[in-house]
Length: 446
Image (cartoon, rainbow, N blue to C red; front, side, top):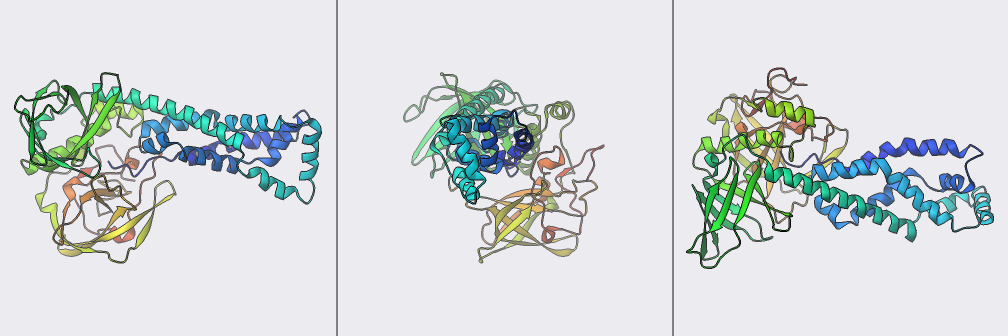
């Protein structure tokens, strides 16, 4: 459920290397003009990737949307189709500013002892090529943003298969304002928001299983805003994400983070329904379309029976060394986490310990979470062989709740193309944990 598995765009550009190799073969052919031959001697795919990466990182819209799969998919498709051609065209335009005699002289210079130094010189940033790459990035980012708008329209129109009214009552925190959070309460068709000393009350009218209109009530100190129609499009752990449509056709998004539940059944249904709907929803599912449709037509994820004895209060011991841990992923890459501490508990009649991790430099304006990847004796049989994950809130008073009824599979259990962290050996439990998500009949645990 968390975004640990966002595909990176630069590794995908390695797929462009064969196109460059073909150009190198063509460079040996006499009919290839002098400029093309010079280009193939001066410029490399590695240089292209470095410049293209710099152009991406300098684009604010790219940095702000890199975590969204639909945005990255759009950029990846564009880049694989024409990024290298754009780069080659930009370079050719630069070299066409030289006379044939100058081009010949440069070729002769490359054959001299100074040739390697000249290649390094041409590899340095050149204003014209850099500007053209940045303009190109701006164009494909705009296309990616358009794909986001298209996806937003799907999120806004999508209808849940579960009636979310059954799990909405309770307390929340709204982190809408960076660095500031306020308390929200849902009771039936009423929502109360406490901001400082003031309470604002809103009426709720449900339009479908997950879409509602929200409007100011008359006794509010001031009117908080225009009436709007909101759709809850994803529940990820305690976060209820919703989207609304603005008068200009754009979409606004926010999330309410649930802090109190009316019962444990409500808490567990929130987790299970959210996980299933995430995979059903075309705007949030990690599954390819055919697999998503098959999943949506079925019963959804399967779970072990609820076992409240596997909602364990563990002793928490923080790591005070500032240690970091580099974890391999299913794709062969790696990701580095901060080691947050260890959880000590009893399970299966014996003492157990698991290491807790946190993303490096977590965003201070988002709720802090811990990451717990683990394997157990069910891994590879009734659960995915690559292990399962838990997302945890920060510990309080030296204790930590490990609710294995909320254990979930990484995306890699269902689809290719993700870099899923592999649980370290120290997080291998020798006892079975028959709680949380499990494989359905016909799925393999490998």
